[in-house]
Length: 393
Image (tube, rainbow, N blue to C red; front, side, top):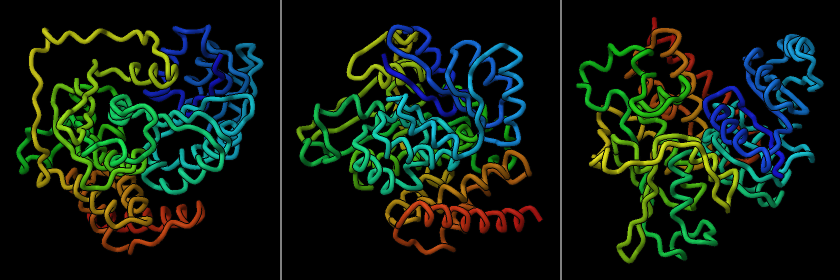
């Protein structure tokens, strides 16, 4: 019986994970659930899964969470704040932590789980992008294992040889190929991008995701962050990681070997496949996913990404090549710019422009510790805020 802490329980990854968990009560027990601000949704999940602990990230909502649990007669303990999240991630009562908190907010708890030697199912790509070096130090210190649950990186993981240890040359691998749907604007003329709305940007053609990741998919920043993540997860140099647009979203990524072989992982675009794989690894279990009917789909298309219309992809490669804390700067500036697009009227093309300006303003420096990463994150956010204000003036 695997004992699970799920951080980010009310998001799309969390809901998919709980669907898989519910199908296998003989295999999985939910010890703790955590969410950001959605108290009613978290209480409802507690009613269904009866965890020992429920955490809400915003301390101002602790009383509301406790009241909701009491009203339903639940003996689940209510806790709140970042320290509570990190305590849950490191708690001895669990062996598996699903890290699905969106953005930099999930960094501290992800590192705590790694240091505690957990099996870490990682959906929070920002933790790797911001602090990949720190994460792998923590994994080495704690003796835990990281299993990726981004669909693309999980696909690569499934195509790797047994015993792979972040050494592409030793495994006979030439390159990794990440697939991208291209987002909702892949065929939209460049002149029309300035007028697109948040609603349009969040209407992903194949995946059901939260707002932030949907916008990142539309700008191709999500794929850029995945390039950086692939570097850390698999030990790949920037020129060993390629991106292709695959509109059908059936091939989730590929691994090319030096003998000319190319292995691909295919499946219906449903995150439950990924989560079932990681939760049960090295076994396989039913995920409740619709079987892939190749005859119904009929064709698989692959296209080069349009780097002129979607410059965020190249900005991510540039940050990876710069090294040090440049990826942290990239991530922070992007989070601020995306929020401004969603809430304040920043134009879609200006997301990339803000990120580019902030990247040019902060020289890359070595990653030292969590405090230095958080200071870099804070500085980049301040600069991004200034640039957003200038563009909205």
